[in-house]
Image (tube, rainbow, N blue to C red; front, side):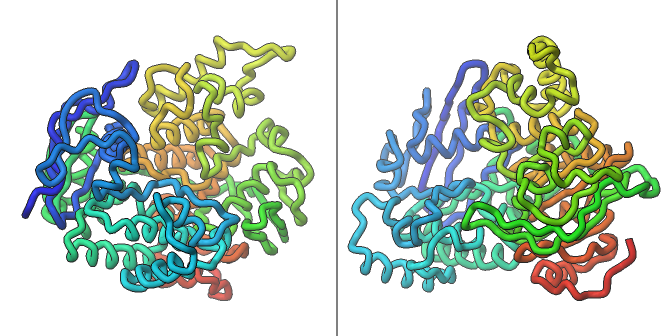
Length: 504
C-alpha cells in the first residue's frame, strides 16, 4: 500500500503537560486507520496538528513524500485533508446549501452548489436536500451536512472524530457503507472512536496513544475490543457490577408532562408519564433530537413552563426552580458539558461551586469558602481520575472526556436522592465510561433513583433496571430491561408505544 501521510516524531507541549511526545506512524493510501487512546491521550492535539489548527514544537509530516507543514486549516484543505469534528459547526437558521457554502473558500452560485450537494449526497448514499433548514434536521442528517461539505473538497485524507456518537445503528451502517466506498476510491480515513467494535468492523490498522506516546499498533480485525481497551489504559479493564437489592419507594414521579420549548428547533414533550424508585436505574433511549434535552431541563427545574406534575419524594415540586430542587436532592447533568454543565472560562474550583454550593455548604452568610470549594474540586478530580494540572485550570482546557468525568463526579459526590443525567459517557474512553457507569450503579445501590438518558443502547442495557424510549417527545411505558431484544428496542424508539408493558 502506498504511503499517504507519514508522521515522524511530532511533539507538542503545553504548560504542565506534554500532549504529544515524539509520535510517529504512517497512513497508507486507501487505508482506514484508527487512532485510539483514553481521554487526554493526545488524539485531539495530534489531529489538530494534521489539520493545521496547532503548530507542532518538533517533528515532521510528509504528504505523498513532500513536506507537509500546514499553518492553518486552509493549507490543510489545499493539501487534501478534510475533517469532520465531533461537535458540529452548523447554523440552525440557515439551510443546508448555505451552511456548506460557509465552509468553502470560493463557493459557487447557490444553484450550482445545490446541484453538487444532491449529486454527491446521492453518489455516497447520504441523501440530503440542500434547501432544508438545518434546525429541522436530525442529528444524523446534520452529520451528513458536515460530511458532504468535506466530500465536495475531494479529500485525500478524511479525519473523523467520534462520528457515530449521535447516530442510530441504522445510520451507522449507512455511514460505514459511505466510508467503504470512499476507501475503495483511494481516500484514506483517520478514524477516532471509543466504540471499539466499530473500530474492529471498519479499520485496517490502529495506532494506540497513552499519555501522549505511541504505545502500540494492531490489526483491529485480529484484536478483541477488550485487548484494545487494555492497551489504551495500560491496565485490566474494569467491568461495572451492581450490588443486588430490591427497589424501594417512589422517589420521582412525573404525570402528564407537556412542555413547549422556547427554541423553535426544540422538541415538544407530550404527556410524559413515568416513575422511578429508590435503588432503581431507569434508562431512556432514543435518537438525538426526540426530546432528551427538554426532558432533562424540565426535570432539573431549568424549564418552568411545563404543565403536568413532578413529584419528588412525595412532594410536588412542579413550581420550583433548579436551585430548590438541588437543595432537596434532585440533581442533573446535561448533555452539553461545555457551556451548559460547565462554564468554559471558569476554573474547575469555580465550576464546582456553581452546582454544589448548597449541598456541600460551600458558602456562609453570602461569603464563599474558597478553601472548602477547592477541596471539593480536588476530591472530584481524585475520585474520578480527571487529568488536569490543577483545580485552577479552566474547564475549556480539559479534553472532552476529562471534563465529562469532572461534571459527573461533581454531581455524584453530592449524594443526590435522584440523579438525572443525559449522555453520561458521550465521547469518553472505555475505561472512563466503565467508571462513570459504575458510579451510577453505586448511586442506585446506595438508594438513589437514577434516570439515565442515553443514545448508547449497550450502555442502557448494561445498567438499567427498566427501559423506556423517547420518540417525538412521547415516552413509551417502561419495560423490564433484562431480556429486551434489539428488535423490541428499535420498535420502541420508532414510536411503537402500544406494545405490551411489563409490570414495574
